[in-house]
Length: 117
Image (tube, rainbow, N blue to C red; front, side, top):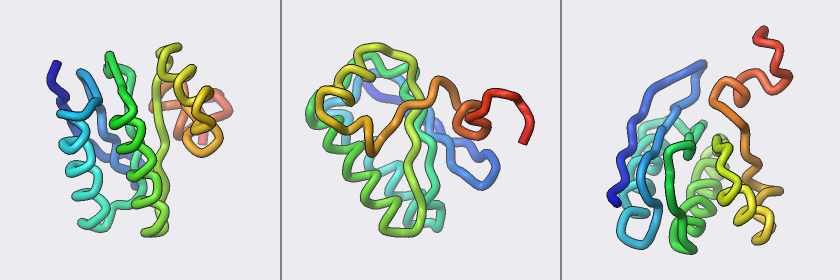
């Protein structure tokens, strides 16, 4: 399955919503999209992976590279997904400490869950 990435803006962050598979053939598209945002001066990125059906080791490598890229420019990368498979992969690799998952884009912006800022 192909990967589609749509980017919007929210509260000074780029929100990139990906859908499809994140693997060897589609990882470069995600990398190009997010690196393009960083180069254009937007190093704060929320990556919504809720609609990503599959991720392989190349996809994980892309996520780590994007985290390094955003942080090197004074920004950050936040991940969104409730998919148990992705959570398990991040936990098994230890990446959950560097790339914690939020349950929704709203939760990234309001981690308390109260709805107010």
